Length: 170
Image (cartoon, rainbow, N blue to C red):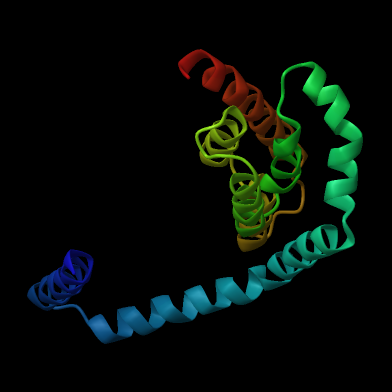
């Protein structure tokens, strides 16, 4: 209830402020809506490609297959094998990663080491490729090389430090 009241308060404040400054509120609103609709249309192909790729990877079992193959290597260094699908999908899709997190938490206790690591990973990493695709499409940039490498490196450190901090704090 308080969220709705806050939203109404903000809208009322904007309207009163615009009237006090003698601004055409309706024209400003329609112009902003038109610009945002154009931006949404411009980034739609990138979003469609990412959502299709994530759906194909999950439906084909490719993520589970790759996680199964890598699980022995990661388990030997103390990384929970159940979190590998989350590592693979987190950078591409937030909703896909949330579904994988739900699968992990339904298989293990949320208070288990694996559950905690998965939860920290979800909160400390970003949907890197999705974010890059959306923002670069919006500003019509094609060269993403200087952005992808540091962003993926940050995600890798996020995954590694998720395990370390869960070990240290719990």
